[in-house]
Every structure is written in structure tokens, then in C-alpha cells.
Image (tube, rainbow, N blue to C red):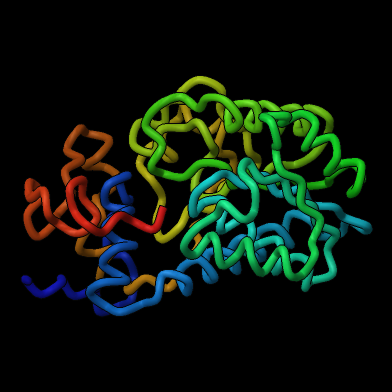
Length: 281
């Protein structure tokens, strides 16, 4: 395997801002795990810490703040479950809505679900696809949320949300209309990471914590109404991967969005379709 490019000596990202496409984001996660030996649960924990810091900034000077976290079925939802623990430990009132039963989560998200269960945090699941009922029960236990966290879908989304997740997106937006602020995990659910186009119903967030580097779509004008302020969260992936796989934002905007990999066309490259390793998200 070719040696990864060295980062700039001054410790910056270089002269151009780097972004990570949907596929590059998967590769960063996979190579952090497979090449560098960073445990995937460490990446999830670091994501949750970055989210906690952003959430606490959004809640500053808000006495009696209450946070509702909407968790999807995958690792984005796992980030949200880990965040629930971190906010609870920070003495913030938290309730969680999950789009699948806690016992159905697997992998790292399953670890986080088990911890949340053992801590007896307030969790409501959308049993029988009763999404409005789950959100209603959560707000009855919590009170009207000050902040809603969108941890429903990640960068891997390529088509409009359906079913339970679609209804959860609608509930998040309803709570924003009712006065809650919204924090999105990695990117607002429903937004295409590469193009910035909304794919059907899309969460409208005031702040988005995007992991490792911005996604190309987040930087486009059409995405601003959905993403709000963009904050980059450090998940502990080696910076060499950003310089190996990142694309200058200007190049992507100009339509030259191919990112560097060992062999971009290889079907068995780590994290690509057909390989045994999928990205963390």
C-alpha cells in the first residue's frame, strides 16, 4: 500500500480547505480502523464528545435546559446514544427517541444502546411506527425541549427518507417550529452530502457538527437553510487520512470532485461496495 501523504509542516490543512465526499468519509473511518488500528468505538466516543461540546455551547445561559435526541437505526444513531450519556453526565435533562428498539442496535451503536439502557435514561421507541406518539411520550417525560439533536441519518443517505425515519424528520422540524433549536449530527438528515440537495423532507438545523471535515454539499448556498452554522468535529482519525482523501473545496465546486485513493476503481478497496469493510457511518 502506498505511503500516505504527509500533512503540511505547519499543522494546517494546507492552502485550500479540504472536504470529504460521501465515499471518502467512509474510507476515512475504515482506514482509521484497519490501517491505523483506531478502535471504531473510539471514533464514536470522540464524535459524541464533539457533539456534547457543541450542544453545551448552544445551551449556554439557558437554565433548566432540556435536550431531546432523535436516533436513527445506524451509527449516526449510535453517536446520538453516546451523546445522551455525555449530556446526562453533564447534568443536562435528556430524553431519547429511537427509531428501532434499543435491543435491535448492533455493533458500536449496540454498545451505546446497552449503556443507555443500563443507565435507565429516558428512552422512547417508535413501536408500531407510532413516531408522533414516541415524540409525544418523550416530551411528556422531559418537558418542551430546548434543543433537539438530529442523529437520524448520516452521510450514507442516497435517497429520500421513508417510513419511521421520515416521520421522525417531520417531528424534529415540528419541534423547531415550536421553538426548539436543532443540532444535526454530521449533516442534516435528508440532505445529500455531496450535492447539498434536500432529498425530500430534510431537517432544518441551526448548527451542524460535521465529522473530520466538511462535506461538499454543506458548503453550497442551497444547503445553508438546512445546515446552519458548520462546526467540524474531531473524532481522532489520523490527519494523514484527511490529506490523502480530502478534496479542495474549490475543485469539487468546479466539478472535479474525484478523491485520491490507492485505486479509486477497485471494488475491493476498504469501505467500498463489495468489500468486507464498510465505513463507520
